[in-house]
Length: 189
Image (cartoon, rainbow, N blue to C red):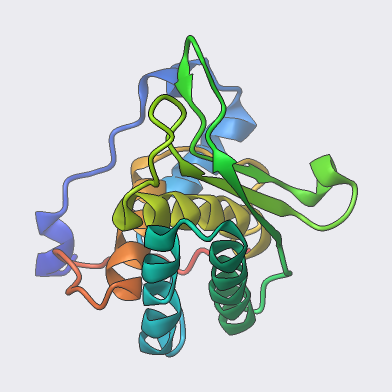
């Protein structure tokens, strides 16, 4: 084991792990082992991600949707994953459980092309969401897409590995340095 590998603590399954059937546990563990999405020429995506910020601040829903589509299409093109239909809506839906920030619907659900939906305004105050929060939500939904299409996982779980992939992609898209050792088993499907 390398020195870097010995510094990383083993993943801890979330509480619902124990209730999963055996095949779902295998998928969960596989997801947990993938810590980073390897994107060729990720630096070229930085201006695409940053282009969303001023459009979001202006509250221009159509322009934000277009910029998100360009970014997501570029990610899919670099990874060789299928396209996604991108939608940006104004006000987040909410109920007693809270606000929905984003939604990924795989092609099995849509009956065609997978779909990512994100909302750009808060439900209560109808304020435009801060750029980093909005981008993290978009990246989160992209990670669900990659679980199915890049890694060929049967299900997409919120594992520590999933959140590590999300955080690493955020840092890449914002031109920020990666944190800690980036250990990643080759987990392509």
